[in-house]
Image 1: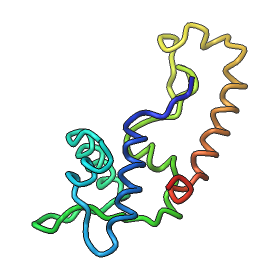
Image 2: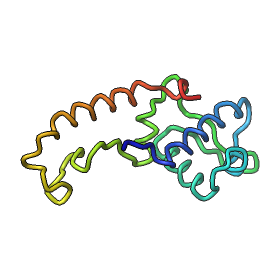
Image 3: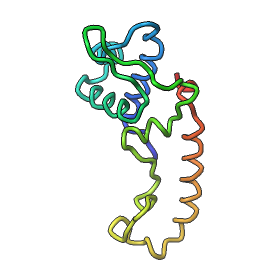
Image 4: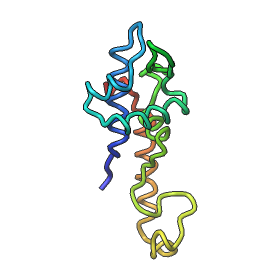
Length: 135
């Protein structure tokens, strides 16, 4: 069953919190963690990944914290997922470079092509769903 990873869910909560609470100031990871009930260590790692991918901006110092680098209208769910090194994958063979170790039926699978079409549709939906729709 397709399921969004907890890290993606937490990241959406964090991005939402940053969006609504960083009008003039940065929002600290500690504040986000406490208000959104996200484990601090995990949140810190997720925010670092999103900083590296350019989704949020980190400011150091006494009044440091995080602000959005991208408007919620221009940030897709797929970009969030990809920034966290997560994948949308319906089956074990739905990635480039899949081998027989991933699926014993890889060579003669009768559902791989139809599943691939569904996978592509999901990618389109996730790519066209903006953060603004989620928050």
